[in-house]
Image (cartoon, rainbow, N blue to C red; front, side, top):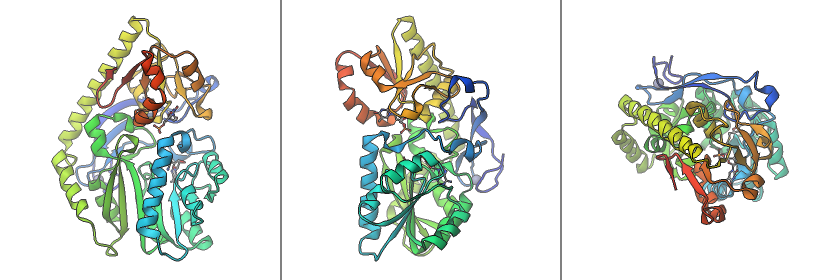
Length: 405
Ligand code: SAH
Ligand code: TMP
Ligand code: ZN
């Protein structure tokens, strides 16, 4: 395959097998026609980018029945309020009539904080159902993908922007050249492109291979962001580690030459080199760690079955689609998956077809053991389920190591 960024010839270092659409929760009638692709991940030694070999067409993932609603987590609501306040304090305060754009604004969880302050804003969100939810929260939203055509449309209708924000979407978009060009066209001279995504360093450290699924065509590091966006006219001027989604990074980029880069950027690049994020050996080791994690998880679930324990999963996450299909874990090992998102309930998980049920089932008949698929929301969930734990309910987590407690 060719690297999407630098066209270097690269080979996958891990093969996860056939994978369905990670957020493609489905009904029994659709089992026959379920779509699968080969999920392989490669590392480019030239530009240090970690990327999928194949990614399904965006229309197959992002549409009017998109299953991920950002508002399902209270902690994420707090996080996005902090993100908005931080942007406001650092980049917008004192500006005359600032304009903020968000790429992948989903149900408006971030932009509502600007809307409430009467700041001019626009969400670009291709999945119509989540976009409708955003409008209900007073967030101005256009149902479309962000790209150079959308940039033209924005300039005509709204004018140029002071900041373009994004969270957990830049890593979804294969053609970053087009995104950078679009962002550059829309931003005014001193405008900033600010986004956060799951961080490669955390994924490697925690063996959280479930960050890899169809939507995540890239897993970024500071090194790769510097190289990718550097090629397309932007400069990485600052970064800020985040605890969200199991370890993320916020990147702050400006048009080349308009700001001076902070010291922390250089420090992080050095740190990543020390971690070996630029070395194929690191990814070989990661593959071995993934295989061990898979074996340990299967073993622990088989033991539960042998002991006649009822096992339920918590959170029908997109990440769990990778775990279930890579480990081939089905309804013989997990009774059902509990999830609070209405659109996921009474459907089946992609590929392995485990039933997804309303959270009330979990509360009414607590299982012996719960596998925490939404491990990135552990703090929030452990607080919420403290009664289950006090009453002797057990948990299985698989990150950073498979364990039961
Ligand atoms: N920002 C939210 C949502 C992340 S999910 C959060 O962090 O919780 C990714 C979102 O990006 C989805 O709602 C999806 O529909 C949208 N998306 C995917 N590709 C996009 C593109 N090219 N332009 C704009 N939005 C996109
Ligand atoms: P995420 O890990 O991609 O954010 O997805 C989390 C999923 O878990 C989402 O479908 C909502 C669900 N969830 C619950 O069911 N209960 C909870 O308390 C939380 C925080 C999430
Ligand atoms: Zn490359």
